[in-house]
Image (cartoon, rainbow, N blue to C red):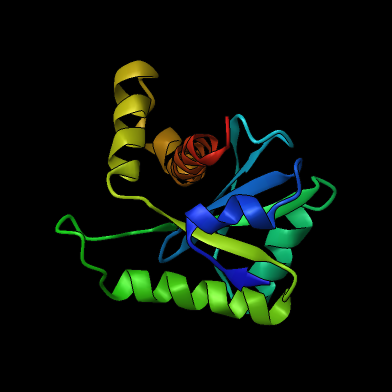
Length: 159
């Protein structure tokens, strides 16, 4: 369908249907999914990147049967608000997904500080070891990104 601003997303989504959140790293893709009512984001899995087409197929096989209505991709905006190379890469990922799955609706969510916040939770509250954090941080960051977008979407709903 299209890549849209989050303010345009509610008009393009059905009333119910899950959203998938993605934290795109250099070597991995963190994946999270919401419930169909789009209230809670849950970390799902971390995928190891291979080739784009294989990654896309793996991603959609993973969320198959979850009534996915759209995607929220984390956008690693610089602290000063500018977009760098990683933002361009994430935008290219979205465009390439649309070539394979033109029915998709995709939006971006500013992911500044998401990985740092997740690491803090894993260390301070869960006392997770470095090895344990390595396996969880990307999918939890995807959940953080998706939860932020879900809360913003709730703020866009008419009263």
